[in-house]
Length: 130
Image 1 (cartoon, rainbow, N blue to C red):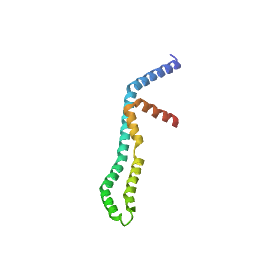
Image 2: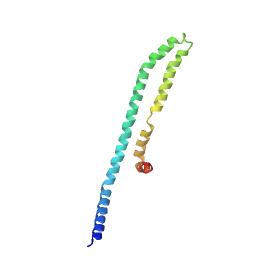
Image 3: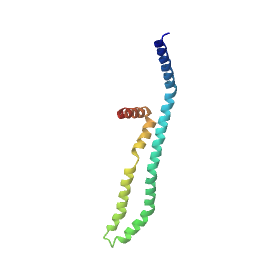
Image 4: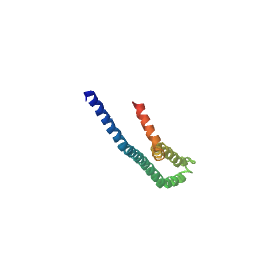
C-alpha cells in the first residue's frame, strides 16, 4: 500500500467518523441551542419587565395622591393642575411602549412554533456577517 493510498484511507475513515459524530451529536446540539436561546430571550424579557412593573406599581400607589393634589389646586390654577397627572400617565405609557421587549418575545414565539425557521435565520445571519 502506497502513502497516497494510506492517506486516502485515513481521510475516508476520518470522514466516516465525522459523519457518525454529526449524526449522533448535532441534533442534541441544535436542541440545546434552541433551549438556550429560548431561555436567554425569557431572561431578557423578565429583565425588561422588572422596571416596567416597578414603574407601574409606583404610579398606582402615587396617582391617588397626585389626583387629590390636582383637584385641590384646580380652582387656583384654572384647571392646569390636571395636566400633571395626565402628563405622568402619557409619559409612563410612552416609556412602557419604548421599553417593551418585542424582539425577545418574538424570538421565544418563533423558537416555540417554528424552530427550523429560527435556526435558518440564525445561520443566514452568520453567513451575512462573514
